[in-house]
Image 1 (cartoon, helix red, strand yellow):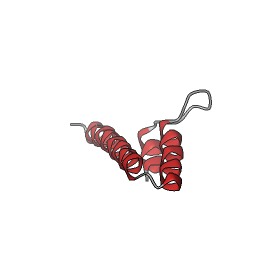
Image 2 (image 1 turned 90 degrees about the horizontal axis):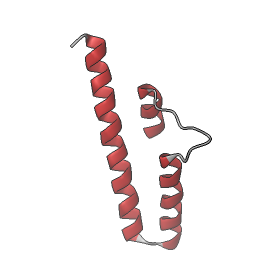
Image 3 (image 1 turned 180 degrees about the vertical axis):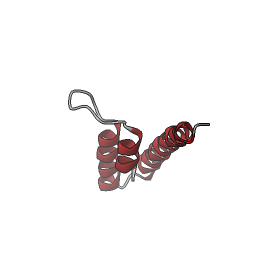
Length: 68
């Protein structure tokens, strides 16, 4: 879902720069493998923050396209 939202907003990851979504995916796998619920909770909070940010961008983009 996040990847689709990023594409829709025009936000693309750079191969030269670190991709925050990739970092979150790695952190989630590591937290799950370690059975660390606190780390997993942090990962979920980071994902929620990314979703909120992308939703704001998409809402603004839709508003502009509507001419408002």
